[in-house]
Image (tube, rainbow, N blue to C red; front, side, top):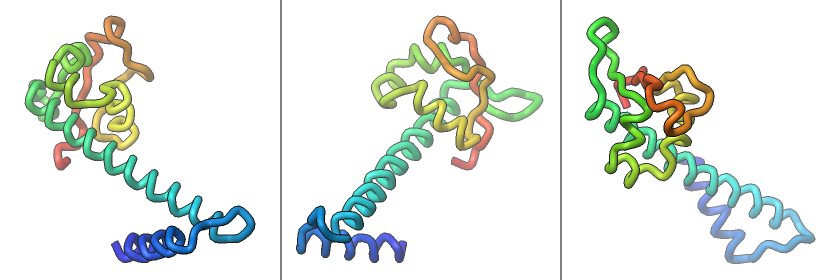
Length: 126
């Protein structure tokens, strides 16, 4: 959190003095604005992954042998609330898979073709 405050002060200083292409301020402005953009995108992805976890818990069934919640891609895709809430179900699932929050066997999920693909909730602490 301390670094975010320092970066915020640096960024506001750059806004006050204005970046120019002929000095180092332009470079720092570019780096800091890129950093803030990625930070905001990461926060949005984390929020959507947490929403996905809640959807899987509410729609899925708990596997009696593993205790993990499971649902199919088709069930998630056809759910109106999921469609209206998540910007991209396939993208959110891929981000969740990268974070090891969910698991599924396909590399890419397409509606119709992968409707029976089992989505397993791996982390329940989200």
